[in-house]
Amino acid sequence: MTRTRNSSRAGSGILPTPQALKGKRVGVEQGTVQEHYAKVKWEPQGVTVVAYGDQEQVESDLVAGRIDAMFTDAAQAAIGFLKKPQGKPFALVGPIVEDKAIIGPGTAIGLRKGDAALQMSLNTAFDEIKKNGTFKRIMAKYFATDISIQ
Image 1: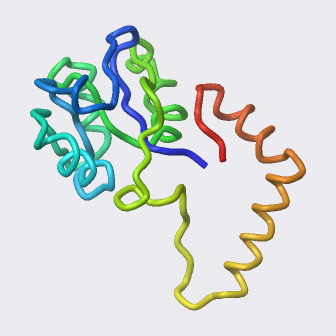
Image 2: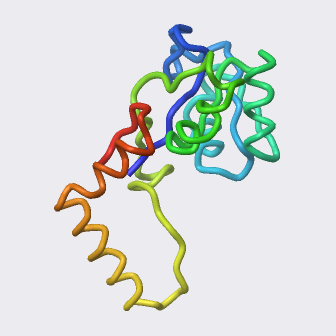
């Protein structure tokens, strides 16, 4: 499963901590757990959190230098933005940001409410591909960037 990470210019030394981000501008997509986390944990510590209507706007302002970092889902950044030509000067930086109360325990998908049979089938399938190594092979093939797998 993936977690939330900061992306910033490679070698910038920016880490996803209030101390490292103090005085910096961090872009987030509006309505996401990243926005909520950044506003609760970082903004009171002197970090300017800039919310955008969509992820493309965040990425555009990062490239243009209007923000110092973006706070987003690591997989989304790794398979999307960082693979694009404009994403080449940037990298995932620092450790995975974890906070079960705000961010949650990991990646999720939505199912019809009350569809216990589908939920059980998916959970069983995910457990099996993790156990037999298929999940790690898929992650290595499609997510060459350092992304935490749990």
